[in-house]
Image 1 (spheres, helix red, strand yellow):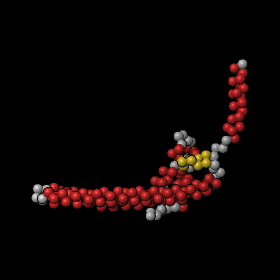
Image 2: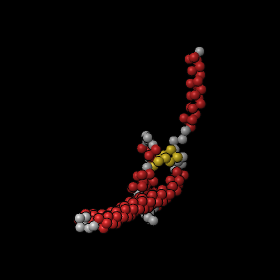
Image 3: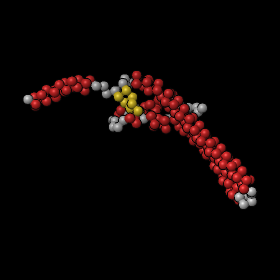
Image 4: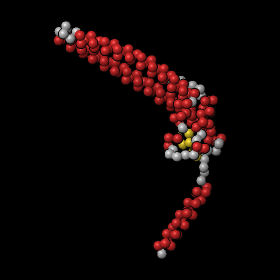
Length: 176
């Protein structure tokens, strides 16, 4: 009796799911967005520009740090020469300079991060119509980001095709 019910349930489940298996579309592809961001002409232009800006700011901040270190050493050498009030006043001025430096550095880092995010957002917004057009032309139902895929057939990866199209349409992204 139990085996008969089990067989009936199993048969019902098989009949219920079998048409879905047979009729399922295999039009699901994936694309590696990170690869496109790092290897497309537009993505590389973003990286190069941000790298240049970062190096410029790094050099500027290193010079400021050296100046602050020299000022700190000078202040330490004056500790026994200056009166206690004058020394405390000098220390407070130095602390203010250090805080201003830290604030400036953090603001610059945040600004560069904001510029990077905006540029990447612009690139992704430019990529969306390319993906839409590609999906229409190739009868693709879904395009999923590769980072959400655990296992996938290599044949379903359309990253290189999209990279070629992206490189032909967008060569550069302007930073704001």
